[in-house]
Length: 157
Image (tube, rainbow, N blue to C red):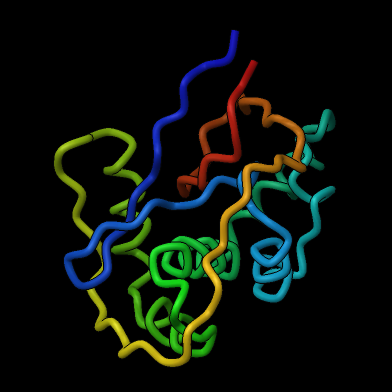
């Protein structure tokens, strides 16, 4: 039986956005993640060796990973915006505020403090992004709590 996962949320200009999950990314979103981080699907697979697992957690807690996930979440809500505009908005978010908001969204459902930035004006139209395909394996829960909360990668069996 799979455990339920709680959606992580972040805010920009008092608007709330869902943090995407790795198992719900489409090909365009995987490309965005790669462009920000250089990480590929295999980089997210849990490792048996403790040292390799620490290295994996370190790679997925780098600022580029968080920024890519913010970019994707914001893009899903604003598919009409160009990538450069989204990059600017998400780049202006204060990392520690974003991490606090993500952490609080897992512990407090009603109250979600967020990073505050200004939304850009819409530019040229872009097709909406939607996908129900799952390409990544389910995540396994680590026994050690990370120093910085990570985005939820799926459900744990």
